[in-house]
Image (cartoon, rainbow, N blue to C red):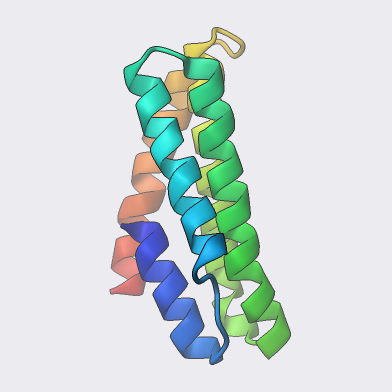
Length: 121
């Protein structure tokens, strides 16, 4: 939902295309694979798919902002980096790679999303 809103919003504000057809299909496929592999208990593949989705999404948002030189929009890039970090910590916690990774991933991620809604709306 956040990705959809940001792809549309950044595209409208910069006047350039963020993702369509094949790139958008790739984003959706990565997002769907992450959810399916989570359901199946394949957390390593789910984490890789989800992080690949978020990094690709970041690039699709970042490129039009830089191209249009809309530096006011740069704050959203920081929000996305914080979400990617929180997501990575959550998956690292699931795999027991980071002690309390779920805690350090879920709580900050939740608060970043809530703050983003207050800022964007």
